[in-house]
Image (cartoon, rainbow, N blue to C red; front, side, top):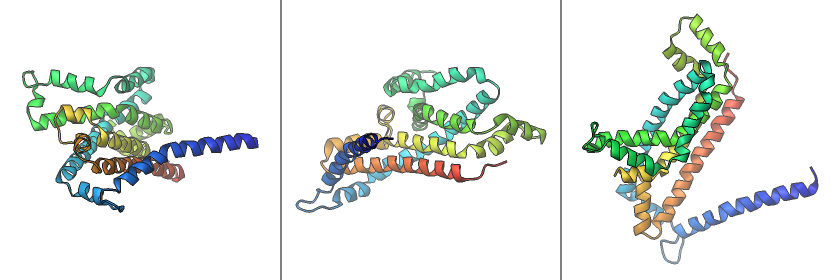
Length: 263
């Protein structure tokens, strides 16, 4: 590689970093100006002491965990079965998992409201539990492209057919094969999809707002409409959560590469 190519590469990298970090630095700097004349963490203290922040963030964390569990229960068996028994269906499954990237969330939530309102045959929106169930499945749909691709990539690195035949020769059933043979071998991929799902759920606004649930996304919007410095502090916190999830993905990927393969 020539010296000019290296200079151009470094210049592009520095420009990209500045383009990303300079606005974020301004965001953080403004969030520190809640106290006149000095920098302080007053905006962050106000956010963390707000009971609505604690309630909405806790609710979104619980919903994220529920969404991750539902996603794992749906995606891991599906991706495993497609790879083992139905390789011809893989393009169709991939197409279906990409649909949430094309269909807006507002279309999904209006479909839910139309199908499951209080006058329908299954009035899920008429109760808190039913609405929470709808929201969890809506989150699962939004996270489906990321969870499926993460798990499918993990399955590509595993000899699924050999592991299945070996487990069956020892008398294992399908549930045992999935839970004790396949899943442990794709844990890094599952965790990568789980962290992405967590980041998506924490910041999602449309589904939670239109289903009238006390989630973190609508709380961000309400604070942004009524306060000056707290919205910027919340934005920094949201960035931190997203970066934390990305860092955990990198950490899991690094450990999975350095760890010895199971026989």
